[in-house]
Length: 213
Image (tube, rainbow, N blue to C red):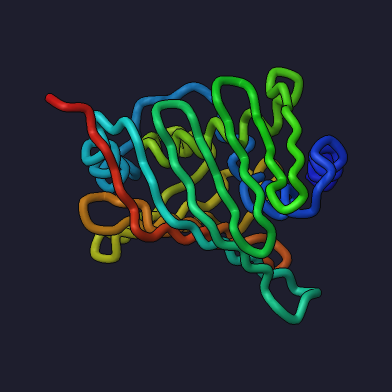
C-alpha cells in the first residue's frame, strides 16, 4: 500500500494529490464484477440504489478531514465536487486550489494557484483509474460493488452502513462507515485505519439531477 502511495505521488508530483488519494485508496480493491446481493446487505443498499435510479448528475460541497496519530492537528481540505454522467470534477479550494477532472480514462489536474496543469492517461495508471471509477460508483448509488469484499452491518434507524473487511490482508482498514441522509443522499464516508488513523469525507448542499421519465 505504501508503495502504491509513493508511486502515485511521484507520478502526480504534488502533496495535495497525495492527501486526496490516500483518503480514497480503500476503494482501489472495489473493482470486481457486481454480484447478486446477499440477505445481509439488501435493505439500505437496495434503498440507496432505488432512490438514485435514473441519476444523471450530482453536485455537492465536500470537506475532507484526515487524522494521523503522529500529527497534532487533523489535515482539513474543503471544496466541491460534481458528477455528470461519467465525468467527475473534484475541486479543492482550501488549503490549495486544485482541480481533478476525470473524463473517460483521462485525468487532468489543474494547479490553479500555480497556473499549471498536467494530464494523466489512466489506462497507464490502473490504481488511480480504480480509485476514481469506484468513487463514481459510490456517488452514483452503486454501493453493491462493495459487498464482495466486506461484511456489512446495517443501522436503518441511523441510515448507517458499517463495512468490515472480510480479509484484512486485502483491505488495510478496520471499517468503512457510510452515512446516508433523507431520500438516500450521501452525507459522509469515513475510513477507519488500523493505526488509529481515519479519514472522513463530508458532503453537504447535495443537488441531484435525474433523468426525466
